[in-house]
Length: 70
Image 1 (cartoon, one colour):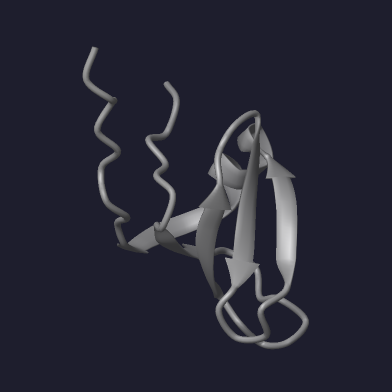
Image 2: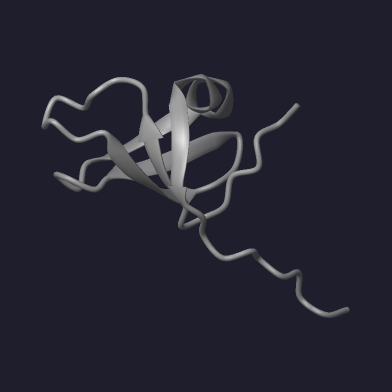
């Protein structure tokens, strides 16, 4: 089952970043997930499968994206 991830989600990962931060914000979606460290601002791209394994919990959810009207 695929984890539902939204742009703007704030997640806590299982392992600490070298700067000491655990919390990340999702800024890009696709086959790769782009996340930004909330402590130092570093941006990282992770494969979706790796991202799903590393997420410990969602701290806050981003807005639901509404498809454009047809």
